[in-house]
Image 1 (spheres, each protein chain N blue to C red):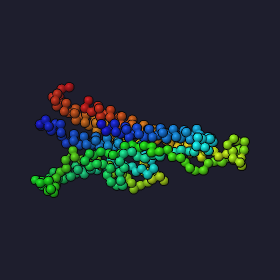
Image 2 (image 1 turned 30 degrees about the vertical axis):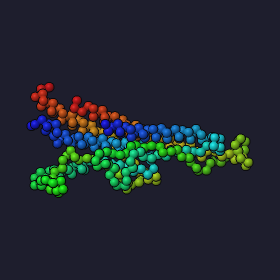
Image 3 (image 1 turned 60 degrees about the horizontal axis):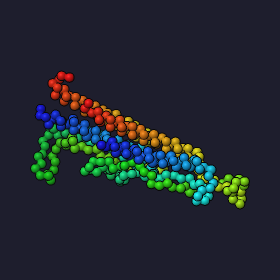
Image 4 (image 1 turned 90 degrees about the vertical axis):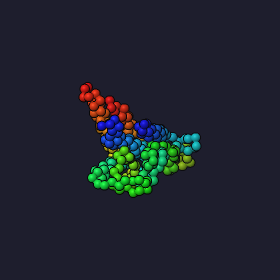
Length: 147
Length: 145
């Protein structure tokens, strides 16, 4: 049944959305981390999203005329990228990670940006849950046909 | 009325295609919502209503005109009325607009509206199918409940 496919599409977005929330939470948690395994302060991370399934070309019908199917399969995370913008620098000579001039490099995480991203990700997640709810409702109606 | 016509009447064929189109519409909407934050993504849209109404118009206009018989598959169709069961939805990509700086053009509000519209449309279609079946059942039971 096609509704299973619709639910899989929305489900892929839920998986991607959860990973996105994890990465944002990790950024906020490490907003003040000055030591990492790679050395230096923590770098902000972002997810890279890409559509799943066949990419339809510009103005071309995305439908195979023989099978009459939609080829989109949702979204996926193709990678977690590092934000290479410069670190924040704060004068704090007493800090163990301060350099010769007394400056400490802090992560390039802006908590306000992360909170805004967090809310956007939450809303997107809710929209996908609504799409799954609609698919479930439609599938149930389809089962009740002719009763 | 023969038994084949009971089960394959044109209204039923249209309803079947419309239900399929509604399913495909739901898939495209779910895909659009899933990619609401994918950079460069362009929305897809299902076209079915226009195709169906133009086919219905064609049938109406060809019912009182001469239809050319096709004895060879390479013959041109002359006033041939389209079969309603063959009308399939088609998906187009709306690539000409851009809503945000990252090239994505998913309008989440319009997608959520289309989602609820499509759900209601699907429910209406299932009720029509149920009504058709109910008529059949009434005929079978000779009007008794």
